[in-house]
Amino acid sequence: MNFPKVYLASGSPRRSELLMQMGVTFDILRLEIDETLQENESSIHYVERVAMAKAQAGWKALGSESKHPVIAADTSVIVDHRILGKPDNDEEARSMLQLLSGRQHQVLTAVTVVEDKRVLCRLSKNYVTFSVLTLKEIDWYLSTGEGRDKAGSYAVQGLAAMFIEDIRGSYSGIMGLPIHETRELLMEISQPCYE
Image (tube, rainbow, N blue to C red; front, side, top):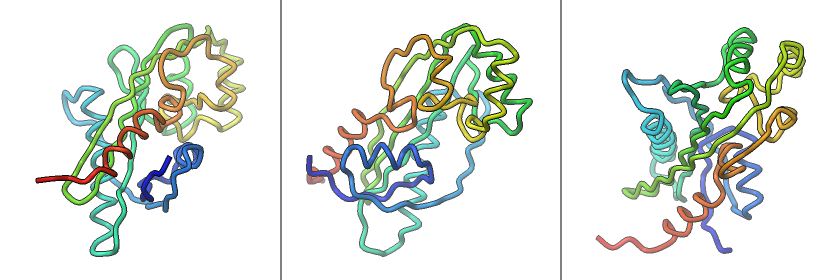
């Protein structure tokens, strides 16, 4: 497919890998934005707001340079209506994995594309079921360091796959960039905008 060149507002190797898999040409923008959960904010609003903030910050950072669309995404793991972000330490990661053990949780990924005044967003809703994890398994997984910078303290594409009994939805969405929704956005942003 003939996708436009984009800027990816993310340092995530997984998101880069998924864009490459799609055949999208891109440059990376590394940005820091506030990802603090707002009071009484729903999980859907949170991931959409953060993805949009990343993409808009990327567009703004480009200034008056020759621009291509900016794409950004945000992923959250939700269990018991609670958003599990990236763990601050191994104790927090251990608590998260114990919470996920033996049950289903939701993984939401919002992806946003910004070009000038156009802001397009899609949401990928997915479900993951973990087997029951022993403390020994959790400690082993923590010792690998794999889940340290991942929402919910695990990587679906890594060693944590050994713990996953069932996936409903988009595997790439759980990884952090839903390919189907990203394709839709890139096709839409390629179309002329008439005001």
